[in-house]
Length: 485
Image (cartoon, rainbow, N blue to C red; front, side, top):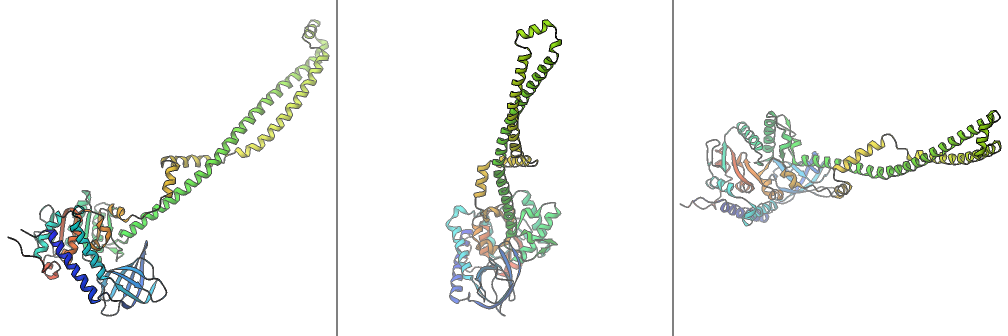
């Protein structure tokens, strides 16, 4: 019976623990000085520095390190993403200036080994949180340290291989597989031996997606900063996880600021228009009063006109008509009295009309609404109602912005990084994938492959040149027991 993934995980966890004690005991993580460097570029809250170490010094990739400047600046933490000769590309969480002179770099190899060992141990102790079915299919390959299947892509449902000594051919096949899996709505974790290979793979897949009409920026996330700005003729720095998250939250902050401005403007216009509405109601009432007063004035003027006309022709009226008028109290004397009464009433009404006109003159500007204000208010009101009302908006504005890295990475269909980052970054202990693709797998240590395979539910795909397995020797473990027959 072949060894299981749990057996191999325990073996490599023990081996990492031993290596960690050796590193700590030998003082391998001693400070490196002098270190010079320069800032290459910035993405969000991350900075990429090129550090030049003294001749003969190096730092293993994906090793955490502290950089202590020679001046009074605060030290910063970082991560070695690349080390070629004595030149390190380090990602830092704080800026330490455009140029660095005589700084000190302190790697923490023992710390990352302890973290990796703890992750493997957790995979054993929290079995319910990890599915080791696909990893069990990987175990025979790691146990034998030889190719499981050199057929070029065949294999059982949970395990398959893409073997080729031509990197270009491999990348084409991986890109085609990735597109097929994305269209099947699968979440893919693609791991590489180093970040330069991860950049190249991101460019190749992005180019294939673009040729296939897919919006690659929506699907691909290159975890950690990209070392290259372009790959396969495409700008890949936008595919960096930090760049994507920075862009997303920058847009979120802009949207929140826009919402705040709308809400504050709505709150400003609401009492103002309510005040205008009340003044308009008062104005309408005064205008109605004015109309009634003017109507009464017109009536009185008509009566005066009629009385004057009667007086002018009174003597010429027939006797019978004058007698009938006198019978109802209309004679020359009484008509003059009526005229005086009408004039007195008109004078009183005119005073009331003057008061009404003065009040109208006061209320008209107070009730006036600028031409564009009411349409603006109605538009704001529609937005407020659509977003759930003022209470909901207050809750949205009061909520603190939380850059939830876990939620963000779970929305990516294809995450490309190194296997070392998967094993050493706590974020990856919280997320799960459907498929693992290990590019150039012979050059990825067995512990890192196992740590990555423990995060997938359905399938593991190894790619690379099978002749490199023995040459790399990264899967060999003297502690692996002989096969049980």
